Each structure stands twice: as C-alpha cells, then as structure tokens.
Length: 138
Image 1 (cartoon, rainbow, N blue to C red):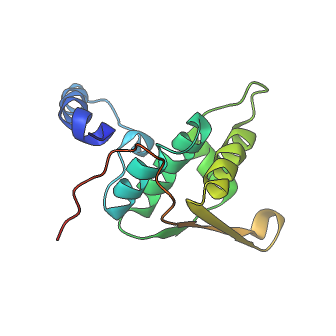
Image 2: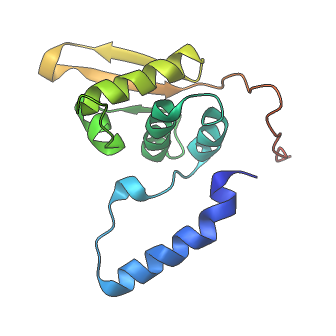
C-alpha cells in the first residue's frame, strides 16, 4: 500500500482543520497528483531520502505531465531541506543525482547562469526486487 493511499484521509482532515483556522497552506505541502503521483510512489522506493524529497516536489510540479522546466533555485526552495553545511541547492542536487543514477529522471539544462532553463523529465525506472506491484488499470 502506497503512502498516499494509506494517509490521504488523515492529511485531508488536517488540511480542513487548518483552513477553518484561517492558516495559509504552502503548495509545497500538497501531495503530488496525476500520473506523476504514480511515478513518485515507485521512485520513492528506489532512492535515498534526498532523492525522495526531490521526487515529491518534481511530481507535484509535473502533475499530469511528464516534464517540468524550473530553475534549480526554485526547485531547491520547494524541496526546502538543507544539508549539514546549510546549503539548499547542494541537497537538491544530490537528490537529483540519485534519481538520475537510478534511471528515474533525465535532466537537460539550456543556457548558463541566470538565464539557464533546466528541464526535468520523469522516466520509468526499474522497480527494486521485492517491491509490491500495483494493480494496473485496464
């Protein structure tokens, strides 16, 4: 059973309570949706924690698409986790490297410095041995 299947009701219940109190909810805390949510559920089994955090935000940003173009800095801000030295971007780069090495992500950067455009493409990777199979929709 996937994380989202297991905890979706509890997450939504907490979100409803926060909305009633008038608290603003960050988009980064919303769970991924669309076909990218299925990609995230599979990819999260194959990578370390940094890769899981990056995969979650990429899946949220992609939605029903298989790619998203976003600057590295914006992705790092969305992930919002710092490494031991306090760097957001370095932690995000380590997560992207883990996803790329595992075959779940393709990264293409066009341009340099502030004008650079980075496209992240979600790829179907190899499921680990012993990973539970989801029932495929016919």
